[in-house]
Length: 267
Image (cartoon, rainbow, N blue to C red; front, side, top):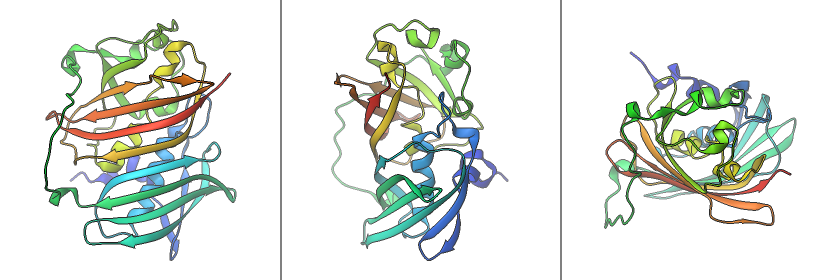
């Protein structure tokens, strides 16, 4: 029988409780980016996994992360604080530290998405992508050495942005399929990782690098198993700062996650 403990995401985001609101873990090098720093979505997911131990509600609903300095592989500590436990939601904070320096601060709210019920109106539509098997393996078209984090997911694209081939094409949006490479189905915390797992579309403007300052993710529904359809958009690059909006739709066509992050570009 396969359990989540058998998957890399779960083992690498798991932490050990060493105090009432304190956890320890080792950040692995399997989640590093092009420049050797630890991916922010992985850091966020590690904080959320620790915070799950302190709240009764099973599902992430929203999280906001402020990245104070780059993360790196090695021993880390997470401290948590529960702000409120209510009937429908619980809210808490988590801070991840490396070498006694704060790397990221997270504020998150949890709920039980399985019991969520109420008025619903969805104006948007999922990306109109061909089936994954009819799309291009994104990483086969990639012209640069693959960073370790790119091996944690599989991606399929109908059209590969120019920067993937080394020739930025000026696109401000892209759509693609994604799933975890080892077959692990997504859950709300995996979704929180995935919204920060792709190379920023701002790279297609010829931008050489981008670092997240703040990321907020909203989980709208527990995702169904299978491929996830993603839409990524950046409309405003102003004075070296840009936003990135990310939508994830599951295999049934349901919107399961939304995020917005603010990032600073490298020069």
